[in-house]
Length: 113
Length: 118
Image (cartoon, rainbow over all chains, first blue to last red; front, side, top):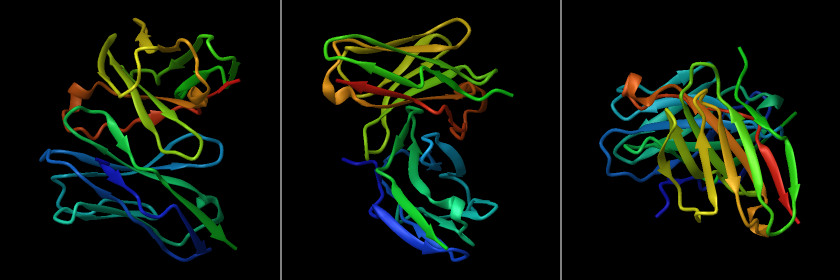
Protein backbone atom coordinates (compact mmCIF):
# COMPACT_ATOMS: atom_id res chain seq x y z
CA UNK A 1 0.00 0.00 0.00
CA UNK A 2 1.14 3.51 -0.75
CA UNK A 3 2.40 5.31 2.32
CA UNK A 4 2.19 8.75 0.74
CA UNK A 5 -0.49 9.76 -1.76
CA UNK A 6 -0.37 12.90 -3.84
CA UNK A 7 -3.44 12.97 -6.05
CA UNK A 8 -2.62 16.05 -8.12
CA UNK A 9 -0.17 15.24 -10.92
CA UNK A 10 -0.03 18.84 -12.07
CA UNK A 11 -1.36 22.25 -11.14
CA UNK A 12 -1.35 25.72 -12.64
CA UNK A 13 -1.39 28.81 -10.47
CA UNK A 14 -1.35 32.50 -11.25
CA UNK A 15 1.58 34.52 -9.99
CA UNK A 16 0.93 36.07 -6.55
CA UNK A 17 -1.89 33.65 -5.79
CA UNK A 18 -1.83 30.87 -3.21
CA UNK A 19 -1.81 27.19 -4.08
CA UNK A 20 -2.52 24.12 -1.97
CA UNK A 21 -0.86 20.81 -2.69
CA UNK A 22 -2.56 17.75 -1.28
CA UNK A 23 -0.85 14.97 0.61
CA UNK A 24 -2.34 12.08 2.57
CA UNK A 25 -0.35 9.45 4.38
CA UNK A 26 -0.79 6.03 5.89
CA UNK A 27 0.97 4.85 9.01
CA UNK A 28 0.25 3.00 12.23
CA UNK A 29 3.36 4.41 13.87
CA UNK A 30 2.40 6.98 16.57
CA UNK A 31 5.64 8.88 15.99
CA UNK A 32 6.41 10.08 12.51
CA UNK A 33 7.58 13.11 10.59
CA UNK A 34 6.23 14.72 7.47
CA UNK A 35 8.35 16.65 4.98
CA UNK A 36 7.88 18.61 1.80
CA UNK A 37 10.61 18.91 -0.80
CA UNK A 38 10.84 20.93 -3.98
CA UNK A 39 12.59 19.61 -7.07
CA UNK A 40 13.28 22.19 -9.78
CA UNK A 41 14.28 21.14 -13.26
CA UNK A 42 17.91 21.03 -12.15
CA UNK A 43 17.08 17.84 -10.23
CA UNK A 44 18.24 18.76 -6.74
CA UNK A 45 15.77 18.14 -3.93
CA UNK A 46 15.29 21.20 -1.71
CA UNK A 47 13.86 20.86 1.79
CA UNK A 48 10.89 23.16 2.39
CA UNK A 49 9.11 22.33 5.63
CA UNK A 50 8.76 19.72 8.39
CA UNK A 51 5.88 18.68 10.66
CA UNK A 52 6.25 16.24 13.54
CA UNK A 53 3.35 14.00 14.48
CA UNK A 54 3.30 15.40 18.01
CA UNK A 55 3.53 19.03 16.98
CA UNK A 56 0.43 20.90 18.08
CA UNK A 57 0.77 23.77 15.68
CA UNK A 58 1.02 23.78 11.92
CA UNK A 59 4.53 24.36 10.65
CA UNK A 60 5.37 27.51 8.73
CA UNK A 61 8.52 28.52 6.85
CA UNK A 62 8.25 31.85 5.10
CA UNK A 63 5.72 31.50 2.28
CA UNK A 64 5.27 27.80 3.01
CA UNK A 65 2.83 26.45 5.55
CA UNK A 66 1.75 22.93 6.27
CA UNK A 67 -1.91 22.25 6.99
CA UNK A 68 -1.64 19.24 9.30
CA UNK A 69 -4.86 17.35 10.00
CA UNK A 70 -3.78 14.34 12.01
CA UNK A 71 -7.14 12.60 12.27
CA UNK A 72 -7.54 12.75 8.50
CA UNK A 73 -3.87 11.82 7.95
CA UNK A 74 -3.45 14.84 5.77
CA UNK A 75 -0.45 17.16 5.40
CA UNK A 76 -1.19 19.68 2.68
CA UNK A 77 1.37 22.26 1.63
CA UNK A 78 0.22 25.83 1.08
CA UNK A 79 2.40 28.17 -0.94
CA UNK A 80 1.32 31.76 -0.57
CA UNK A 81 2.02 34.58 -3.03
CA UNK A 82 3.32 32.26 -5.75
CA UNK A 83 6.39 33.33 -7.69
CA UNK A 84 7.64 32.21 -11.09
CA UNK A 85 10.54 30.50 -9.34
CA UNK A 86 8.09 28.25 -7.52
CA UNK A 87 7.51 26.29 -10.72
CA UNK A 88 8.84 22.84 -9.86
CA UNK A 89 7.91 19.36 -8.76
CA UNK A 90 6.83 19.09 -5.13
CA UNK A 91 7.13 15.92 -3.08
CA UNK A 92 5.52 15.00 0.19
CA UNK A 93 7.47 12.52 2.31
CA UNK A 94 7.11 10.68 5.61
CA UNK A 95 9.62 9.25 8.03
CA UNK A 96 8.53 6.44 10.34
CA UNK A 97 10.31 4.30 12.90
CA UNK A 98 12.70 2.86 10.30
CA UNK A 99 14.07 6.37 9.62
CA UNK A 100 13.89 6.16 5.88
CA UNK A 101 11.86 8.75 3.99
CA UNK A 102 9.02 7.48 1.83
CA UNK A 103 8.07 9.85 -0.97
CA UNK A 104 4.85 10.45 -2.83
CA UNK A 105 4.66 10.58 -6.62
CA UNK A 106 4.88 14.36 -6.64
CA UNK A 107 2.88 17.30 -7.96
CA UNK A 108 4.13 19.53 -10.74
CA UNK A 109 3.38 23.19 -10.14
CA UNK A 110 3.51 25.70 -12.97
CA UNK A 111 3.25 29.36 -12.05
CA UNK A 112 1.86 31.61 -14.78
CA UNK A 113 2.77 35.29 -15.09
CA UNK B 1 30.00 24.93 3.50
CA UNK B 2 29.90 22.37 0.71
CA UNK B 3 26.65 20.53 0.15
CA UNK B 4 26.19 16.91 -0.83
CA UNK B 5 28.28 16.17 -3.89
CA UNK B 6 27.72 13.36 -6.32
CA UNK B 7 29.83 12.07 -9.17
CA UNK B 8 29.67 11.60 -12.00
CA UNK B 9 26.88 13.91 -13.12
CA UNK B 10 26.07 11.69 -16.06
CA UNK B 11 26.94 8.07 -16.70
CA UNK B 12 26.26 6.07 -19.83
CA UNK B 13 26.56 2.31 -19.74
CA UNK B 14 25.38 -0.66 -21.76
CA UNK B 15 23.30 -3.59 -20.61
CA UNK B 16 25.23 -6.06 -18.48
CA UNK B 17 27.89 -3.59 -17.40
CA UNK B 18 28.49 -2.34 -13.89
CA UNK B 19 28.02 1.23 -12.69
CA UNK B 20 29.61 2.92 -9.69
CA UNK B 21 28.13 6.12 -8.31
CA UNK B 22 29.78 8.18 -5.60
CA UNK B 23 28.50 10.51 -2.92
CA UNK B 24 30.18 12.81 -0.43
CA UNK B 25 27.93 13.94 2.42
CA UNK B 26 27.89 17.31 4.12
CA UNK B 27 30.69 17.63 6.62
CA UNK B 28 29.54 16.31 9.98
CA UNK B 29 26.80 14.14 8.55
CA UNK B 30 27.11 10.44 9.22
CA UNK B 31 24.03 9.10 7.44
CA UNK B 32 23.84 8.63 3.69
CA UNK B 33 20.73 7.64 1.79
CA UNK B 34 20.39 6.53 -1.83
CA UNK B 35 17.24 6.98 -3.88
CA UNK B 36 16.30 6.07 -7.43
CA UNK B 37 14.07 8.38 -9.44
CA UNK B 38 12.95 6.95 -12.74
CA UNK B 39 11.67 9.42 -15.34
CA UNK B 40 8.40 10.99 -14.25
CA UNK B 41 8.23 8.97 -11.06
CA UNK B 42 8.74 9.64 -7.38
CA UNK B 43 11.77 8.69 -5.37
CA UNK B 44 12.23 5.05 -4.48
CA UNK B 45 14.35 4.30 -1.42
CA UNK B 46 17.39 2.17 -2.15
CA UNK B 47 19.81 2.12 0.79
CA UNK B 48 20.65 3.83 4.04
CA UNK B 49 24.11 3.83 5.61
CA UNK B 50 25.08 5.22 8.96
CA UNK B 51 28.46 4.98 10.66
CA UNK B 52 29.64 2.56 8.01
CA UNK B 53 26.78 0.12 8.50
CA UNK B 54 23.86 -0.64 6.20
CA UNK B 55 20.81 0.31 8.31
CA UNK B 56 17.98 -0.25 5.88
CA UNK B 57 17.40 -1.43 2.36
CA UNK B 58 14.59 -0.83 -0.08
CA UNK B 59 12.85 -3.33 -2.30
CA UNK B 60 15.59 -3.66 -4.91
CA UNK B 61 17.43 -6.75 -6.17
CA UNK B 62 20.84 -7.69 -4.71
CA UNK B 63 22.65 -6.37 -7.76
CA UNK B 64 22.11 -2.95 -6.17
CA UNK B 65 24.68 -2.66 -3.42
CA UNK B 66 26.82 -0.09 -1.76
CA UNK B 67 29.08 0.80 1.07
CA UNK B 68 30.05 3.67 3.30
CA UNK B 69 33.66 4.54 3.92
CA UNK B 70 35.28 5.71 7.18
CA UNK B 71 35.06 9.32 5.98
CA UNK B 72 31.27 8.77 5.55
CA UNK B 73 31.36 9.05 1.79
CA UNK B 74 29.44 6.36 0.00
CA UNK B 75 29.40 4.34 -3.16
CA UNK B 76 26.44 2.77 -4.94
CA UNK B 77 27.18 -0.14 -7.23
CA UNK B 78 24.75 -1.52 -9.77
CA UNK B 79 25.79 -4.80 -11.36
CA UNK B 80 24.44 -6.46 -14.50
CA UNK B 81 22.76 -3.25 -15.65
CA UNK B 82 19.32 -3.48 -17.20
CA UNK B 83 17.55 -0.92 -19.36
CA UNK B 84 15.08 -0.13 -16.57
CA UNK B 85 17.94 0.94 -14.31
CA UNK B 86 18.08 4.16 -16.30
CA UNK B 87 17.18 6.84 -13.78
CA UNK B 88 18.39 9.74 -11.70
CA UNK B 89 20.14 8.44 -8.60
CA UNK B 90 20.00 10.84 -5.70
CA UNK B 91 22.14 10.74 -2.62
CA UNK B 92 21.19 12.49 0.59
CA UNK B 93 22.88 12.97 3.92
CA UNK B 94 21.72 13.82 7.41
CA UNK B 95 23.04 14.04 10.91
CA UNK B 96 23.27 10.99 13.14
CA UNK B 97 19.68 9.89 13.68
CA UNK B 98 20.46 8.91 17.24
CA UNK B 99 21.59 12.40 18.21
CA UNK B 100 18.21 14.02 18.13
CA UNK B 101 15.97 11.00 18.31
CA UNK B 102 13.15 13.14 17.10
CA UNK B 103 13.10 11.87 13.57
CA UNK B 104 13.11 15.40 12.23
CA UNK B 105 16.55 15.22 10.73
CA UNK B 106 16.35 16.86 7.35
CA UNK B 107 17.81 15.05 4.41
CA UNK B 108 20.03 17.22 2.26
CA UNK B 109 20.21 16.03 -1.31
CA UNK B 110 22.84 16.19 -3.99
CA UNK B 111 22.07 17.00 -7.61
CA UNK B 112 22.15 13.35 -8.60
CA UNK B 113 23.78 11.10 -11.14
CA UNK B 114 21.83 10.53 -14.32
CA UNK B 115 22.45 6.93 -15.32
CA UNK B 116 21.55 5.90 -18.84
CA UNK B 117 21.66 2.24 -19.80
CA UNK B 118 21.71 1.59 -23.54
